[in-house]
Image (cartoon, rainbow, N blue to C red):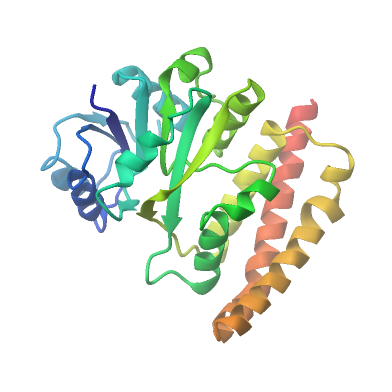
Length: 283
């Protein structure tokens, strides 16, 4: 049975054609369904050239976990692939490499490598490469996963659907729970898609706030791990030092200049989100 590719779309007319062309070039046969969140920029006209399987999500009704559960219910087969509409497959093996990650029956989900766009600002490009790259750094983190280019095993989802009561990190929550249930999560570094964002400081703070709030809800935290020093100040210091070294090594003074304001916003946004999330969890 050919796997389904579920593409989630919202106002990405500037890039969705590239994403759809990348899907069409895959060496593995597949089926495509698109969940569109009331796009108004012409995205749907482009999408309709590639598939008539389109599910419209009304404006204001997009709850990530709920949409993911709906996507699973609308498809069949043991493996379902997810791809954001601004996440462009880079070769004909993108899909096959994801599916090959399920060779071991213990694997609940597989996620692919993301590379930054050519116009990506230096520190966002650095963060993308450090998060993905060859996967070496992931083993030092509590957990790592991204739904932007990924696939999940249906039988695991049937026993454990996505949560629909969180607005951020629903993919991290699901894969973390899968790990706690004894499953494994695999990184497919050979499945490559281009995906990055140049956030404004305001946008970045909002995202970090949401992810910090989700952190508090998803993971268990020892008292020391929740402190200002451990959760916020030490990561901030490490990031700034790493940014400066990166800027010097790559001869990009812009990265050094951008580091302090970006990492302050990152630290403050994530800390406040975490505090709000922890307060809500403790009630």
